[in-house]
Image (cartoon, rainbow, N blue to C red):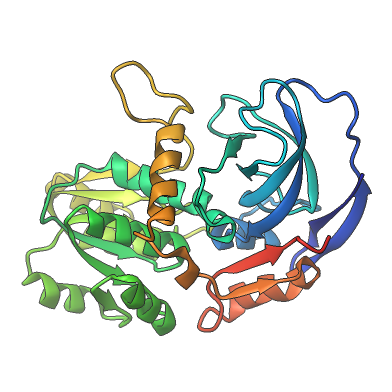
Length: 336
């Protein structure tokens, strides 16, 4: 069967390519899936589209946020032909994909009834956010600042708000701050004078929890600097760009304030629950699907554009250089 897929062939070079998918002799844990929609995960995919991380090589197929329909399946796939599923597969109109028990994937998970397909493309972003939130020791009334209001930053801020925290979102892009407010984040800061603005909002008391979603070293330093004694700093964004500085003041800050710094790399929770624990990818999946279904978090407000995948090059460019205009882009595969 014919498939079309997004391929990154060089820095700021992407296009649609065509291939044949072999659908014969499916393994028990494999399925043939027709894509309906897939979302660009701006952080991870832009780092690849523009080689932000040193040593990156091309070509590469980006993407891991797809919702599609099962056309054929092996006996171990926990869904039926015709079911809508979430798949952490690259952007493509048709995939032969497998499902396993490794949180790093590949995974095929049936969508619950009533979950909007387009909104469901954000599931992986929600899974990043919920895992990070659950890693922190949250108390009702905590003050939390989220540094970086891209898609994952906004989702993280909204989750902390649902847990009864006073949440502050920080981003230099004013439009992102406006969107965060529209979605329910009460306090935002777009000023470069973050320390002064935070001090005003916090009455100089500092943060209980600081979350960096940017992966930018200067932002991480700011998060550490603005956290109160015995507070927590969650590193939810992946650092990708080198940064030279004197680390002694940073380490001293962590040491003298007894800060707890938490690494929040995604997909380190087990797929299934261990005995006596509710910590699993499948539990998190069910929770975020409920958030989507019940509009507790309105994913539709995040979406800037729904486009034909052949326009992928423009989409990556806009997400990189027009952050004041484009926030979240979805590929529509229904005509392929």
